[in-house]
Structures are given as C-alpha cells and as structure tokens.
Amino acid sequence: MNPELTALWITFKLAGITTLILLLFGTPLAWWLARTTWRFKTLVEAVVALPLVLPPTVLGFYLLVALGPRGPLGRFSLTFTFAGLVAGSVVYSLPFVVQPLEGAFTAVGRRPLEAAATLGASPLDRFFTVALPLARPGFLTAAVLGFAHTVGEFGVVLMIGGNIPGETRVLSIAIYDQVEMLQYGRAHWLAGGLLLLSFLMLLAVYSLNRRFVLVRP
Amino acid sequence: MSIEARFTIRRGRGFTLDVRLSVPDRGVTAIVGPSGCGKTTLLRAMAGLERTPGSYFRVGDDVWQENGFSLPSHHRALGYVFQEICLFDHLTVRGNLEYGRKRVPADRRLVSFDRAVELLGIRALLDRRTDGLSGGESQRVAIARALLAGPKLLLMDEPLASLDMESKDEIIPFLERLHRRLEIPVFYVSHQPDEVARLADHLVLMEHGRIQAAGPMNEMLTRVDLPLARNRHSAAVVEARVTGRDEHFQLTRLGFPGGEFTLPGTGPAVGEIVRLQVLARDVSLSLEPHTDTSILNIFPATVTELADQPPAQVIVRLESGGVTFLSSITRKSAALLNLEPGSRVWAQIKSVALIQ
Image (cartoon, rainbow over all chains, first blue to last red):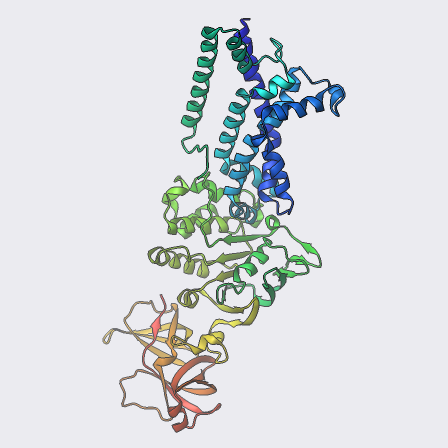
C-alpha cells in the first residue's frame, strides 16, 4: 500500500480504537464524577485534566519511562508498538472525552433520575433509559473531540511510538517527515486531505444531531 | 388502615426534620406551612429520595421503612409529581406514560392507560414531543404518568406552583376529578389556601421541620389556637348536599348536619355534594333569632371557644350539628352579648361561597 494511505489508515485506526476505549471507560468515570459528593473528587478531576495542560513531550516522556523495559509496565513491551500508541493516546485524550461526558451528566441533573426511580426504574435501568439518552449530545461531543484530538496527536507518538512505517507512523508524523525532506507537494496532499476529512467528519456529526453543541454555554 | 410516618433528618445548616404523623389512608392530605419548613423534604422522605436512617413509614399494610430497613424508591408503590415539571424529553408523551406503566406488575395497576388518558384529558397529546407542551399540559401528562405507575400513595409537591393562572384553572378540575374517582391516598403540598379548600380532606400544618397540628380539614381551619383561624380570610369549609331548588327565586338549598343553607343561583344538581366556604367575617351572632332581616342563612349554634384577636376583634368558634364555624366579631360585641364557651347563639351568615 502507498505509505501515505498506510499512515492515514493507522491514524484512523488509532483514533477509532482510542475513542472506543475512552467512551467505554470514560462513561462510568464521568458518571461517578458528576454524581459523587466525595470531598476529594477535585483531586481526580485535576488528574483527569492534566493532559490538557502538559506539553505532549512531557506526557510522552513519562509514558516512555513507564512503558519502557525497566518501567513498571515494561513487561508488556509496549514501546514502539501500535498497542503502546493506543495506551498513550488513551491517556492523552482522556480529558477530551471525560469532561464533555461529565458536563452532560451534570446537565441532566438528579431530577429526571429521581422521577424514573419513583416510576419503578432500578439504578441501572434509569442509567440506560434516562441518563444515557438525555446525555446524548455530550456523547457526540466526547466522541468527536476524542477522535479529533487523537488524530492531531504528535508529541506523544513521537516519544513512545517512534516512526515505524505500517506500525506507528501516523499522519501527523508523515507530514512532518515530508516537510523535513522539503517535499512540500506531498505534505500539501496529506495536510489538505486531513483538513478535508476532519471537516467532513464534523459536518456529518453536526447534521446528524442539530442540537449538538461542542461547548456548553 | 392508616398511614404512619416517623421521620428524623438532621442536616447541616441547622435544619432538622422531626415528624410524627398518622393520617387515614384515603382522601387528600394537604401539607401546608411557610417556605423552608420541610414540606418537600417530608414528601421526598416518603418517596425514599432522602436518606432518613432510623425512620419508620407504613402505608396501609406495606411497611416501607423500619429499623434500618428502607425500601428503595423504585420498589415503593408510589407516584410523585414534582413541582418543576419533569417529563423525559427524549420520549414522546406516550413514551413518558408507558415508562412507569410497563415497569409495574399487572396486578398492581390502578387505572388503565385509556382511563388515565381520559381522566387527564391528554388524548390529543399522545404522539407529541414533550418540549412542545404548555406548562399545564406537561403537568397533566406528569400526573397521568404517576397514576399509571400503579401507586398506593400519590405524592404531589406543589404541582401547580410553576404554572400560570390559566394553567392552574385548567388543572384544578382534573385534580378534583381524581379526588372523587380514585381511592388512593394523596399527600398534597401547597401554599395556596384556595387549592387546599377545594382539594383537601385532611390538613397537616408544618413549621420549622415539625408538625404543628394535623387533623380533618374543617376542624383545623376552625381551630382558634392555629394561625389559619387568625387571618383576615379565615373561613370554615363545609360539605353540604344539594337538597332542592327554588326556581321562582333562583336559589339552591343545601343541607348540612346543622341545618340548611340557601345559596343564590341554581348551578349544582340535586343530590350533589359540594363544598361551601363560610368566611369568619361574614358570620354575625345574636342571642335571639331575627326574622326581620335580609339574611337567609340563620341557624342555632353553640359557642365552643373564644380567642382574642388584637386590637379589637374576637374569633369565636361555633358548633352546629357537629360542624364547626368561625365568627369574627368585635370584642365589644362579645362583651355586650356576654359570650363564653357554652353560650347558645344564633349565627347569621351573610354570604356563603360555593367552592369551584
């Protein structure tokens, strides 16, 4: 396969898998954050938000140390593998999924869930039949932000994934390589393609759900 | 059977709910009191929406809370109508109604889907989205949804408070209809004396998280030691049966255990039971029956209690055939008539209002 297409495929595979994992594990975390009255809740929220402010290289450095052969997670030998990239991306994009979800669950509020309880719905029942449907806009926001943010990932990938074609060479790195080699024409193709795809993706999501809001007022 | 409740909640900020309550398990019990006195908290405790360790709650044969055991809300056979309208916006009106109905065992169903829809007059709304409904329509849907959940107890927290006047007038007749046609007990939190006068059978007065007094409605309205009897609008609410009509003078005659009322107009049908409101300030007293007066409603009564109402008034509690009334007269009149508990008087009632 054409190396550019391969990079594109790896990028989207990485973003897709990362988003899926984050939705799966971020949902209970966000649900808990939105409802707990635990007084150290802010501590957890701060940890979740860290990737927002840390330079990706810092994050990548610590991930590299943790995943490296002598690190605490070294026995999984994840460095310079696709699985390692997924692990890194999950950490890197965590706040972009958890925060919109937490916001959406908070916006649903307690009242509809209490109403559901008085109508005979058990806690699990009301989570799936009331909380999830009412938080739907938040799920779309979370999925799009998580996906887009992973597609745009660069520093973390470079630190823990390197630049192995067909394995860890994602689009952003391919573009960087082309620019390094002064291949502006090819860089244009890649950058433009990414721009167009991102735009189409957002357009589709917005059309699917007109109530969709990226940022809550 | 009865409903027995004993709730204790201690919260920060100095709020304590400490309630012991026993009311009959039929009819509408209105819970009234100033804002912040714990009315809503009491209702939420009954629904199991508040943590209330060490409390006791029994509805008829069903114990919902006792010695550390507390049935979760979703296992309590209740209906709850919230003050702020709370429909599920992701479902249609029909979806909202079905939500509770399909979670109830068939043998616990109280009304059929069609009956609930008919009682609340919402057939035309069934396929609508909830966000397009008016306040009054939404609250009717919420009430029908609560009924379809097969409640043995219906809890209504100021269901009309978030509505405008027009919507209120639209809903009250539906509530009266529920009251007449359904057997389940209802707790109804309200600020509005007119709602209470129309709907309630029993009254619970709350203050600072405690029950100040509780009992049958008219008895409570006419207790001179309670604030209800001591304001400008204090009134007795009496049930009476339409006994006849006077077509010539266009009057309606209504019988109650102490005698007969005559009311202008011929609205209600003979045999119908209606509620009458008798304002304390419309009742005057005399020691002799006067026949040379324009007042039609005159009957004998016994003074049971008197309470000073400074500066110049006295509130007199009267009894006639087991029914109590209030009369607000001046202290001077009370002294001139030499009124004291046990005095026999004639009550002259200037006007009686049909509550509707």
